[in-house]
Amino acid sequence: MTKLRDRRSLEQHPCFHGKASAHWGRIHLPVAPNCNIQCNFCNRLYACVNESRPGVTRHILQPAEALAALNRLLQQRKDIVVVGIAGPGDPLCDLDRTLETLRAVHALHPTLLICVSTNGLNLPSHIDELVAAGVTHVTVTVNAVDPHIGQKIYASVTVNHRLYQGLEAGKILLNRQEEAVVGLKQRGLIVKINTVVLPGINTDHIPDIAAKVAMWGADKMNCIPLIPVQGTPLAEHVTPTEAEMAFIRKSISGHMPQIFHCRRCRADAVGLLGEGDMAGAN
Image (cartoon, rainbow, N blue to C red; front, side):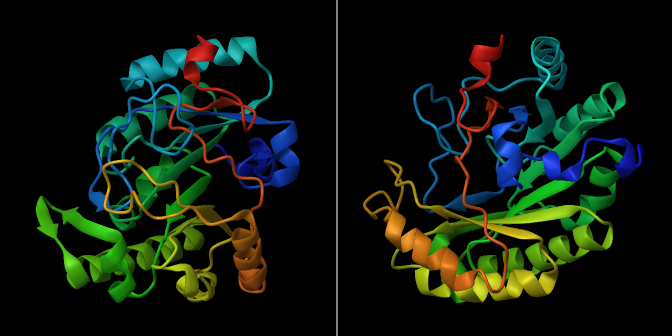
């Protein structure tokens, strides 16, 4: 594997470093359609053209199509430093598609940073494969570190084709997330925690999340306000205000460095943060 010092600077990752976001871009390759968790704020309808939120894309790409799209983009632009897989499902729920894509990207473009965004459920047993495939950055979404709160957020989790619900689901997910983050840090990867702020559910719990993921060794934390989605159990919940988000971030900054510039990118995002989707890159 290419040594990290032979690759782009780790601080050029625009999602992890605010100063980099004005100069360096990324491409998300939407090769992973399936998910092993049903969140109460997600409806899994990913074929969205006009929405800008995590988990939406115009198309699902095969690994070969994703590599071709990346190659075209790199011919057009010199500011792309990161290739990421962030859905529209969970990348490790579609492990073969994800690894095929990552390995091909790393083989052809070994200087690029490679990023994966996951819920962490399937992550512990595949960390070494991700490292071998060139991954440098991983984002793990942790919305609760108390299973009693987690069961209000997750309708179900699926492990080895078995469905778990309620408190058991919350415990399984939490244990695997902890194992995953600790394992990633032991192998020297950069880890960001995403936390969706859900009013009335986990708002008062977020300091506990920050303290816990700090103990796990995570590097940064990104608090994301809920985007209510039609047809979900939390469709009628309100989005936290900017003032509420500012207060939350300030209150936990002593535990974890906070990210303030997140644009809640689509699964087919291309370019600098805030730019469009992959359709504009073809």
